[in-house]
Image (cartoon, rainbow, N blue to C red; front, side, top):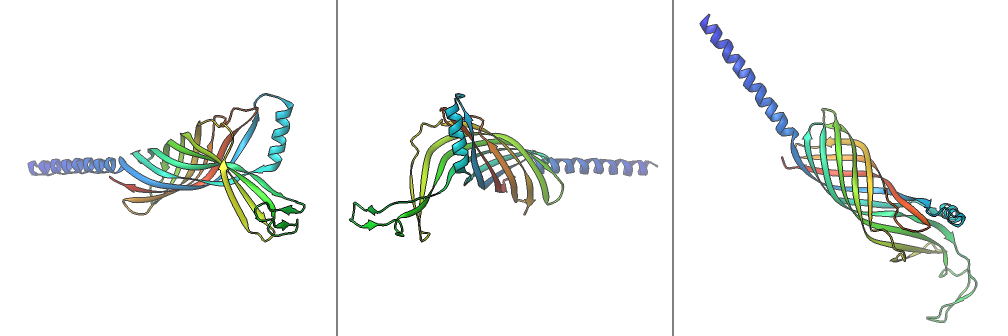
Length: 256
């Protein structure tokens, strides 16, 4: 009887030790630091607002809405994520992003032109004369996003949802003129936009997606993401708010 009691006590001790070791391992695996590289092709546009309530500003908005369209931009950068538990992580990053919008392609019609450089006469049918043009308005930002990532699932593929804020610091604002001739050849000219844009903005960010565990150290996240600027990007009678929606790819490497 004494021997049976001793064996039972030993088994209970081993079970308790084993359970404690398992919990320690799970906690150790859940609390980890990850570093990642991310890139996102983005659908970029703006929302215009009548800032002074005038009829002229409303008319300008109608004209711009009819003649402007989206542009394809991008975001790319590095991230650091601390996994607090299996279901929650906090991510901080720094990204270079190209936001903005575009003017729709517009047809051009000219009479006879004389090139002052060479004296060459161009007729309206000459392939050297631009047939149409398009403008892209580029707002280049340095973004610092901070977000909470929620993870669901137990297998190699996890489902993700995130919410956060990004501080946006304007680096420069340029415009790219794209000229196209009758043969389809294009010429691009980029210059600074002649406006005094606000240099700071804040963008809430939302995303859903999946996390695929490639190995113990590497995982890949794919997330449709939406960002919207809370602050107007210019102080003018017609102001606006930049926003973009993209497909974000992040490859993470786990240090622990």
